[in-house]
Image (cartoon, rainbow, N blue to C red; front, top):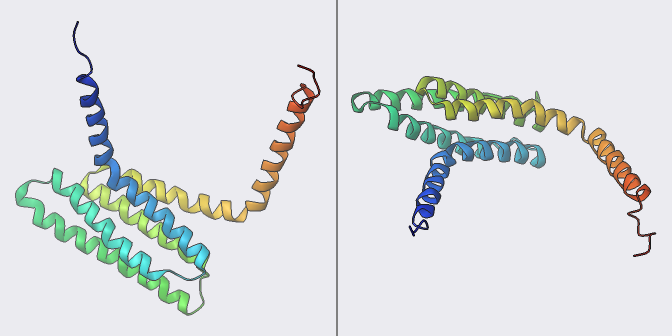
Length: 183
């Protein structure tokens, strides 16, 4: 009888290695969503958060590009990514400066900064031919209007949830699940 237990760790190790491989891209999505949440809750632009997040995104993009780039083109790729993310950072700074002058509220600022991060990720992914970075950027780009809609429609969503809960309770009660039947 063959011992099949030795195959399980290899499969588990492959899954774990695959998860570690995808972790930087998931981290970008999580950090982007945390940034928009923090900006919306704090009612201030949270400029420091976005200033720190942008170089983290640049480092993840450089790391992703490094693996696929020939050794003689790596320096050019790094310089290109540094300039790309510096431009994104300058655009974010311009947005936060406009907040100082009262042109945008904190919710709009958070959405614009998230959109800039998403655009930066998507274009960096195109430049590096990294579909994972493109998908991360596309997800954050879609998340920006969805989050804006959710914030505006919070009362409507709560009403819908309440109606669904009442309907479920009513159906449960009508079918005799309310405890009125004897065992």
